[in-house]
Image (tube, rainbow, N blue to C red; front, side, top):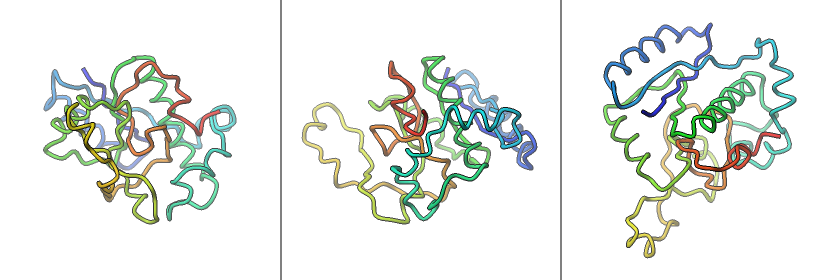
Length: 200
């Protein structure tokens, strides 16, 4: 079954709502996926500075689309580094499991088509599927959504014609990948650094 992780700070005001969402979702999607809370890494974490030193490469940030968007023109704030580290550790879990995972944050609102969208993503040929991309809406970018085609259609398809959709969601710090317009859903026999270019 697919693991669905919701990143949530223990002290967050949304924590009770997140626990309720996990409980309700586990009942609703029983046998199809398993929801659980991942305790977010915060700047209060006892090893926070050490983790940042070991796992974050600030020079990579300067090359990211996120850095050049309207959301960021500076070094990451401590809270953003905590978000980055939380995603990083869930990536490590994905690699360890060698199974598809879904990574959400605690402000997520699951739409009625969540399970269908998840199943569609799992059938896609991509290792990395981005569920939202609002921060690209504020500046010019060469990123495009890649439509899913059958094998016969794929040879004829142009990937340049479909602009990426923007959604009103606060983005996490970027986790760039060679397929840079998709967010993490699968990991297949690739090293973690292929996905995490902000990592050392």
